[in-house]
Image 1 (cartoon, rainbow, N blue to C red):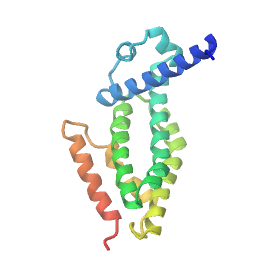
Image 2 (image 1 turned 60 degrees about the horizontal axis):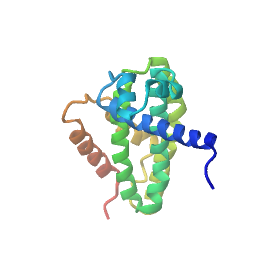
Image 3 (image 1 turned 90 degrees about the horizontal axis):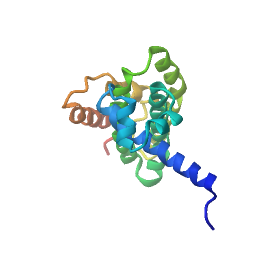
Image 4 (image 1 turned 120 degrees about the vertical axis):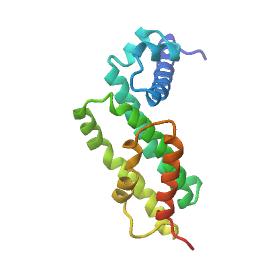
Length: 187
């Protein structure tokens, strides 16, 4: 059975939207100065297509942020299903580092009020994801019992505060390993 033309257009539109988000995430992680035109070019779509999905630059940036936070939050459950809790936490920290890089790149693009609104909306889901990881780790005897999710979030907040120079990735991963070493128990 062939797809109806309307259904095929919706599939193409969703594919374009996903591609635009991926390209925008990568471009914004490299520079907050990237233009809508360059994102459309890199995604291989026309500017009209880009603006149909994201009528403003801010709408695109917000969509990237929302998408990344959703993936970060969902990853906690998925990682725990596939790995021991301490390893799941380590792998989640890797994802958090990638998110921190993108978030840092977006900081200059978003207005202060928008950042506050986003923080209020997404803070609790991120804390809940961390709490899920910590709870599983404590149950398995792999994570310290005296640490809560808010502590961990404060501990890793350097990810969106540190200068993003050429050494940022190495330094962020090193600091996350130090934080993780402080969280896991030794047997």
